[in-house]
Length: 307
Ligand code: ATP
Image (cartoon, rainbow, N blue to C red):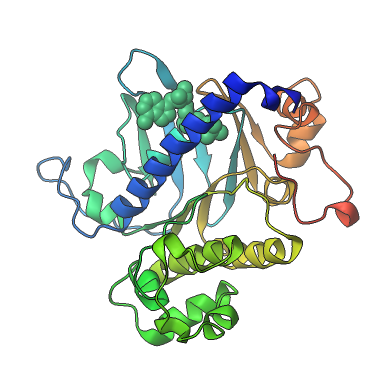
């Protein structure tokens, strides 16, 4: 996009990215934290998940500046299916997924899992049902095994290895000097970008939660790493209820449902075929200005466009 070369816009973008990195780290930490203590209602129950269907019912939210960031958002993310959230920068996509683990609570409306209002259950029991993979993988300076086990301290070595295999990470982990016991540098500095992402996906698999929140990376990887990461994601998404902030055509086209957001509202929802057929909708316009990549023949799809 030509606009990306405007310096003021680039600066604003940088600021948003920095804020998002901080939120991502907080979100991972808080989801994985076994003992969140704040914000449970007196007498809050334990969330028991059966199929893990998610429903946003008339949800509105603001960060406290009197500016609505989500405005009467309603949609369902079907159990065991993938729902992609797309829309221009600032539409409210990250805010939307941060409400699922109750990182924030709606100002009005309800968020239900299997028909239960999540405001009525403990945050601990809610977050036990959720795994989160962020754009910028967050790794700490322990061993690879420590980084994976952090998702579920009770996980056995065999379970950790199985998750790493499914995430296409086992081979490169074994190739490290001490295999699973190799210490990672600060935020995984001794790994490539694609390897860091696969560790982060393996961590979500170790957690083995029925709900997966995914903020798809926009940064480009080389083709080989990209393919490895895509394969890892496919394992992680299988048989889970997935809510993904999607940037790549391959993810968007494969999603069971696409929810298009603009300025805090859901403006379209449906399958890729449904939305592409409606040429005057935002989805078609986003494709035209390449916020969402335009559909291409399957054979020429490549590893997924970076937008
Ligand atoms: P992007 O694609 O750029 O990540 P997005 O669709 O995910 O955008 P959000 O990050 O949810 O959008 O932001 C929606 C609005 O809320 C924006 O106006 C943003 O500036 C604002 N916002 C996001 N996080 C915060 C925060 N922690 N405090 C205050 N305002 C915020």
